[in-house]
Image 1 (cartoon, rainbow, N blue to C red):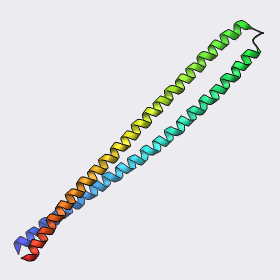
Image 2: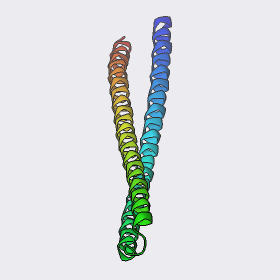
Image 3: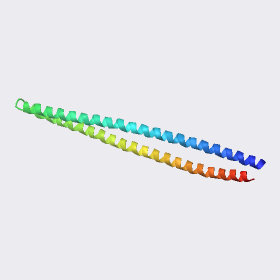
Image 4: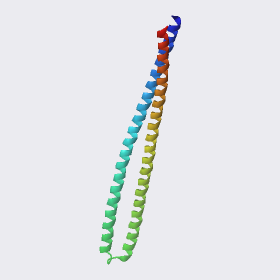
Length: 153
């Protein structure tokens, strides 16, 4: 009778331990899922920023074309000043396009990093859940065997 009580206590402790591990894994999975959701939200925001950069580049292109048109109209009035102004406009436009390209590359890099981070978190969560499930099933079978052994006695 004392042996059965001891086995029952051990089995109860094992089940409580497994239950705690299952809660820990569930919490880790939920945290991973939250991180993944946050990453997706960040990626969406980055996409919106990328769209804003593209719109700014389109606007800049239109402004550039309009400015060039004005330069061509005033060409006869002052060739010397026009050449200087055009050179500055082209330099400024190139700098702005370079800045836009740099921002685009940074957003692309950040998107890739966040995507990899989300993938990694999901894989870790899946691995942890699978491991805990294996441990739980093993302990459950062992517990069933002990119960069967106790029931026979």
